[in-house]
Image (cartoon, rainbow, N blue to C red; front, side, top):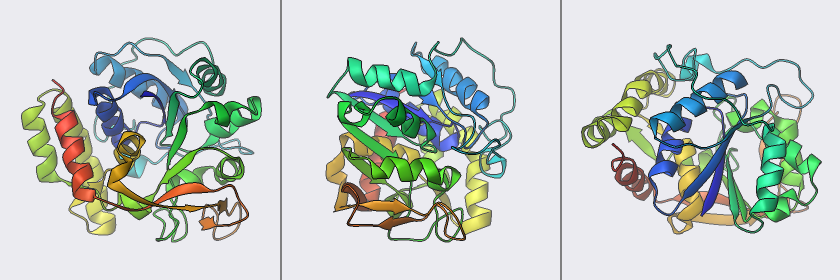
Length: 303
């Protein structure tokens, strides 16, 4: 499976990228970056650093710095730390970004791999909306668009109505869900059922003393946030669950529905079923233990 991850690394993004690198059924062919957990230049730096750490020489195309119609963005430092990787603040600049901006890169890659490319978006959907604007055939050229975002049948996590990725660019999400595409939504309905606990990180670090230990170390900040805010003893495998959904859909129960996104007011970012919209597959339940096992088994194979 040829895969591009659109990402804002991010602690759980790092976990998802590590999983994609380790999974034998995935051919990771590039990353595109977006604002979100960090400023976009930090996202790109972190993405290049992760690829270097994983021994992968892949393009990183930098994308949107702000949401559609906005001129600023405040990153989620309280969740992911000031540089995106928890308490790790010295992250080297390795290599350079691809010459093309993310939206143009995505359009080119979807054309070059028509019907083969899976795009997994684990940040705000700004780059995806821009690619759709650039090329009306873009969504149709993809084999599948898998989105980590939304809270369709459960409460949100940034407000009671909204999940963070959708909330951070509700206009872009509304555009994406308005367009016909072979889309799977992997939202909080399932990702909060894939809890990864401190003991899981410790076991991973024992098996993978380089990458596993790195993920354990940066996750401490993230786990502390989950404990303080939600009283949880672990973190949801949000972005990793979306990457796993690209290749292991038998682990998920899905319903088909159209979606609309509230773009203003108190409910901004809410993802609401709308039968008038193009149908997508919304993950409503998951074999959470199966996802956790699969993540651990794959990432434990890394050095």
